[in-house]
Amino acid sequence: MTRSTTISGAVTWFPHQHFVNGDWVSAEKEDVRPVVNPATGLAIAQVAWGHGRDTMTAIDYAHQAFTSWRRTSATNRATLLSRVFAVLMANKSTIGRIIALENGKPIEQAAGEVDYAASFFRWFSEQARVLSERAVSHPDPSTHTIVAQEPLGVVGAITPWNFPLAQAAKKISAALAAGCTVVLKPAPETPLSALALAWACEEAGLPSGTVNVVHGDAESIGKAMLEHTAVRCLSFTGSVKVGAELAGKAAAKLKIPHLELGGNAPFIVLDDADLPFAADQLVKLKILTNGQTCVTANRLLVHRKVADVFTGMVLSRFQKIKVGDPLDPETTLGPLIHQQAVEIARNLVISAVEDGAHCVFGRPEDPLELDDHLQKGTFFPPTLLTHCKNSMQIAQTEIFAPVLPVITFTDDDDAVALANDTSYGLAAYIYSQDTIRANDIASQLDVGIIGINDMRPLRAEVPFGGVKESGMGREGGIEGLMDYLSAKTISTHRHGVDTNNYAI
Ligand code: ADP
Image (cartoon, rainbow, N blue to C red; front, side, top):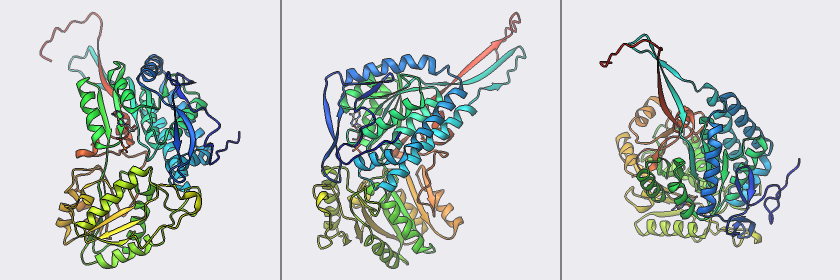
């Protein structure tokens, strides 16, 4: 079947309702909200807006489905997950277009997000099959002990708008592989990608109730997830503030919090780096998802010996960034998600300049030239700030805009100290031709993932997650599966033999 999207009506091949127990249903209050294309300011869809009651119902169904899904053989689970992979890949361009329309990232990146999201279904389909019990030797030969891995139960998943398909896919694929069922609440800005994923799950033949999507009022949906006793894990990706609040409430209800929060990644350029290569990678990373990625290069830390020449290379690459319509294949930078994001970024830049930063690109005299249909879009110019200090607000905040502060360092110890001087601990990047030196620095950084001469260390095969205020728990890798499992010990004593041994 050929499916199409248009600028005005983003999606015509699945309903804009909630997906609950295998059905597309309206919100109980018959409420809808618009989804806005941030590049044009135009509404592209009206989507059902749910509340706590809708969520409670979805959780009831997810709980019902859990009783049979947990007993579905690993082989069958794996087959179904691999079918979701296939459905996503078969519809890559259409789903990519939906992501570009509602999130604003350039179309090529949006298609890449479909690949990335699908890769988690493939990886976890494989992991579902290798998951096995372990036999443990027992001092009493008449006793046989095994340790099984049991699914936690219903997972309440809450996702942000920056990777609207991939963030949902990471949680759903791992939870399903483990034998859990899921109720997902996507971000209000980007519900269509999550609904496209629900549709892919339906097409793949996942049993009703295993995956449910309720879009709407964050507070009442979150509250329902916290209050329903069937929810055993709250898996959240978003801001530190909301994550910390939800984690506290989840802990009070003895639900397991799984948190992927913000980042403040240093991009460290040593004096022996391949500078043109590092500059290419830095700018590519910085403008990924229009600067709104938790693992982006939030701060450039550059050795002072090469700072001027390297900053010049970055500047020349910033000048070539093509700001425009995300649907135009030539575009390399689209809009920010909404006007509030523009205001926050603008204030950060103003405060940095007041504190002594030099704005060398993105100044008022470098205006954006946008087509007529983009005049109401929420665009922000690529901005390069030199003479920054690590103590500035801009260096201590997750920027979430195409703004790069440049900070210099004197030696490797100084670089490590600056890199770690943040409340976050998600990602870091080190560029050097001496990989022993780079690995020595890597071993001293308090973060969850590091790229050495590699701006994209994330893969479905490796665990991703943070330390410090960047969160707890991992997505991807075998660790990502373990987070949705709980060990259960079963000790079987051979009938009729009573060793009566209390000492062991
Ligand atoms: P951002 O600032 O990037 O939007 P948020 O942490 O505010 O980050 O949002 C991430 C996700 O958390 C979104 O789906 C949002 O709707 C949801 N969210 C925000 N506040 C709450 C809350 N009080 N309870 C549950 N979910 C929430």
